[in-house]
Amino acid sequence: MVRVLGRVTSINVRKVLWALDELGISYEREDWGLPLRDPREPQFLALNPNAQVPVFVEDDGSTLWESNAILVYLAQTRKALLPQAPQALGLALQWFTWQATELNPPWGYALNALVRKRPGYEDPAKIAESIATWTARMDLLEAELGKGSAFIAGDEFSIADIVLGLSIHRWFIVPFDHKPMPHAQAYYERLKQRPAGARWMPDDMV
Image 1 (cartoon, rainbow, N blue to C red):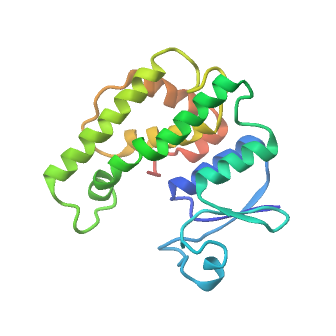
Image 2: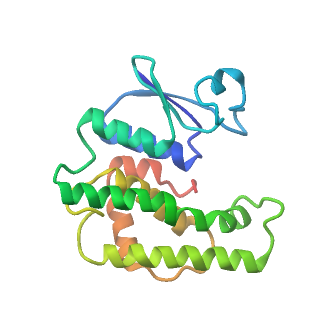
């Protein structure tokens, strides 16, 4: 049986768990990551020297880290969760990459200030800037989703929808005055209709 090392409060761990549930793969999960278990312990560092969750352990004992790399590996080895048609595949990977490089970075300050309440994140101007940049990225996604496809790359659910779904979930959960995003809202509700989507996008996890 495969194993996933990481706490479920991590959005990156939930990416992997959602994919495994979609694929119908049984797995064991071990709590790692602060405040539950320090990933700087030697046995964890031997698997991921970056001391970050998740770590994926295949049933043959091989390991992978970096959540998006794990998703691509699962899609490739299980022949699912990525379109076969070249254009749709390109679109899926385009938005899959964009989520990590463009959509995620702006939320950092707002998330730490408004949800995690971390010291040093109290500057109202920086909170506003974080939200404004995040909203601009969401505007791009809103426009794409407004084209009418059920999923980001067409009619076929993919790993791109997993990562975008979790990011949109975070957008709606973080407490601030949100700009209306009707297409993103409808997409989010479609993803939550999937059993794995509902499981890994609960209202008590950001």
